[in-house]
Image (tube, rainbow, N blue to C red):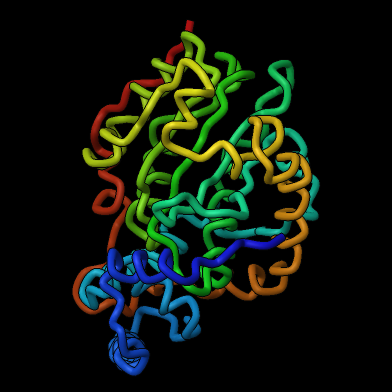
Length: 308
């Protein structure tokens, strides 16, 4: 599994967009500032390595205050939603099965704007919905691996969701509470710049799903969702050549790419296990502990996803 890293003019363009200091010493200074801050937070772990801290800095456009907020949420969510951050082992039958029936690989190449593209598709409309929590867990595991593997930095993420096998039965287990928890993790705890979401091979169910998810998304992300009626329309946004062969591209088969990511996630098994203890300790947080109501606003009434 290889993630092509930007170089030359593209790298310079990305650095400008991310407001990356030209002098590497300034980046090391910022890392030192964040480490000093972490050292003064009794409720937060101190185990974040320099590579991941650089990714946080880049994802937050080198705003130290934003990095502090993200890091706090990164560790807080591990404590608040343990079901998404424990038993992270792709050799477990439950997780292995998900990788068999759902392909979700980040693609090797980069768009002309310097964005990483992530594909997401089911393999069979007749397959029973896999464990939703385990599926969300796997997505966050890929995010954790990319914190280390994106060694140079990318301008943002582009997601392509293939809805060709989507059926009402597949989404019956998605509850508003679970979707909200997951999306808060993605949007608030990880240094991800979501640039675009593209939905292809659409069916009537897609509008229902998108409308269900939208209330849990930031407004600027809602505006970045594109529904495509043809692959040619998608190619206007994502170069055809960088896509998997199933979509007319040259990146190899999506199944092979998915298997490469299975192997990469397997390499991190020991790290994932160690990280189970790396979470916020609310009993030591200065001031009041963060509660589920504060984090997720669960007192409100949510509508269930109903698909006819």
